[in-house]
Length: 102
Image 1 (tube, rainbow, N blue to C red):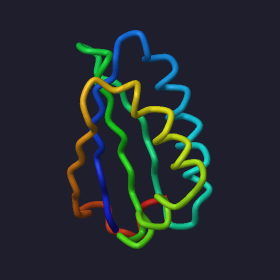
Image 2: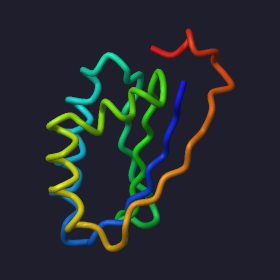
Image 3: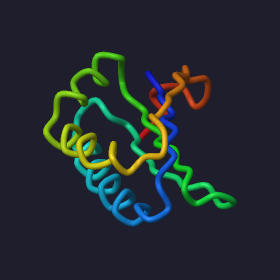
Image 4: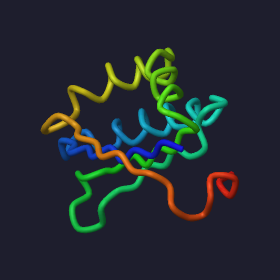
């Protein structure tokens, strides 16, 4: 499995548009065969800070995801809404074992 956390810092006036675009992207992303999870979370103390928690079957599935129309639309929509470029950190799965992910 290939796990990625994407950190996003959004302009305060753009929060609602950003959340809507992310929910649309996440909903479509979950239809992809190679995606196990696609979560959007928002920081409580600073609501302009978000994390996308993305869980893929493999790194190849990430490449496939980035070629989808919903990803390209999301990217085009949210980039002007961010205060700074997004960053990401990659993780490996420990528990539950890969078969335990739904």
